[in-house]
Structures are given as structure tokens and as C-alpha cells.
Image 1 (cartoon, rainbow, N blue to C red):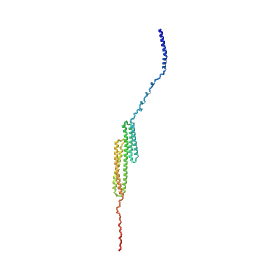
Image 2: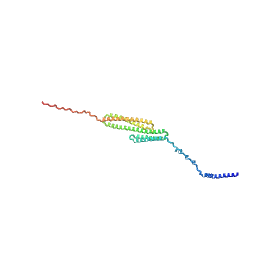
Image 3: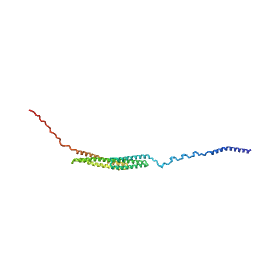
Image 4: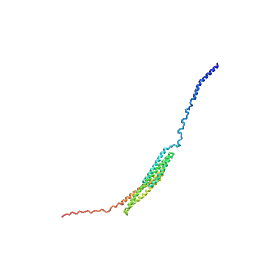
Length: 286
């Protein structure tokens, strides 16, 4: 009886296994048939790519933090360059300047333009605001020097032209005085003319000194040099103008004296008078 119970139990257990096995077998089969898909988040993450700003800066060129200041200074130097070019063109076309002074100014202005080219290069190469400002100021002084120089030389040549005009008029007076009758006392004419010649010589000397002073302005002047040249040249010009003014007064005096000598003297013969007529006494009859 005990053996039968064991046998029945074993049979029941075998049945249970048989019942359970098909489900397990199906589950296992299902597990085998499921595709072995990759997990989505296991794929390479896109943000793992190199970030754009992590790339090295092209050519390793540093940013110019002074670009704005540099650009303004470069424009200023360009304007100074154009100013000197206009000054040079005006000097070349001048009808006042002598040929020698035109040549001297042309050489000086060529040096000024070369200095301005160097100033612009200095602006581009400077690494500080102070360096840029220094190059810009140097260009401004160069242009100011060119303007001062040309102005002084033109003024000096105008003074020399005025002196030459007075000399030409004095020559006319001298010739007219020489045409007066022999023996005429010409001292009233010759005395002012002699002083006129001295004044004209002084004027020419002072004007030439002003030109020489003006031409000492260097291509890259300091402010002190500009002031010194201006002071010296203007003193020379003032002296030249004073001499010309005195010479002009001498010319007027000589012309007036010549006019007197050329005027015939008034007649000294007294006017003739007729004797008064007397009427005959009336006759009376006795």
C-alpha cells in the first residue's frame, strides 16, 4: 500500500512537470527568438563630438584691442598727408614765390611726406594707446610745420616783391631828376632817394633771413622748434615791412621834391598899369 502511494505521488509529480514544461519551453523559445537589439542610450552620444569653440583660433592671431584707436589715428595721419600735398601743390603753382624758394619748399615738403609715411607705420606698429597718440601727434606737427614754413616763405617773397616795386619807382624819379636843366639843385630829391636805397637793402636782407629761418623747420619738428622758428621769422618779416614803409615815405618825398623842381617859377615882373585920364576943364564964356 505504501509503495502504491509513492508511485501515485511520483506519477502526479511527473504530470506536473509535464504540464509545466511546455510553458517553460515556450518561454525559453520566446527568449531565444527575441532580437538582440542594442540599447538606444548605448549609442555614441552626439555631444561627445568636439565643441566648436574648443577649436584653436585661426593662425593664433591675437585680437587687437586698440583697433578703434588705431583706426582713428590712421585717419588723422591720412588727413595730415593730404594737407601737406595741398600745400605742396599751391607752392608749385604760386606766382609770388621765386624759383629758388619753390625748389627749397618742394624738397622740404617731400621730406614732410616721408615723415608722415613713417608716422602711419608707427601707428600700425604701436602696442599702447600712448604709442599711437605719439605717432598721431608727430604727424600733426609735421603738417603744421609745412604750413608754417610755406606761409613764412610766401610772406618773405611778397616783401621782396614790394621792395622791388619801390626800387622801380625810385628809378623813375632818378631819371626824371637827371633830365632837369644843368645846375639844378637836386639835393631835395637825392637825399630821400639815398635813404630809400638803404631801406630797400635792409628789407631784402630781413626778408631773406625770414626765408632762411622758415626753411630750418625739420620734417618731424617738436613744438618748441615750431615756436622758435615762427618767432624768429616773424621778427625778420616785421623789420622788412618797417624798412619798406620807410622807403615808401622816402619815395613820396622824392616825388614831391621833383614836382617842385619841374614846376616853372612864377613870373616876378610887376603888372603894368595905365595912367588915369583927366577930362578937360569946361570952358566958360565971358
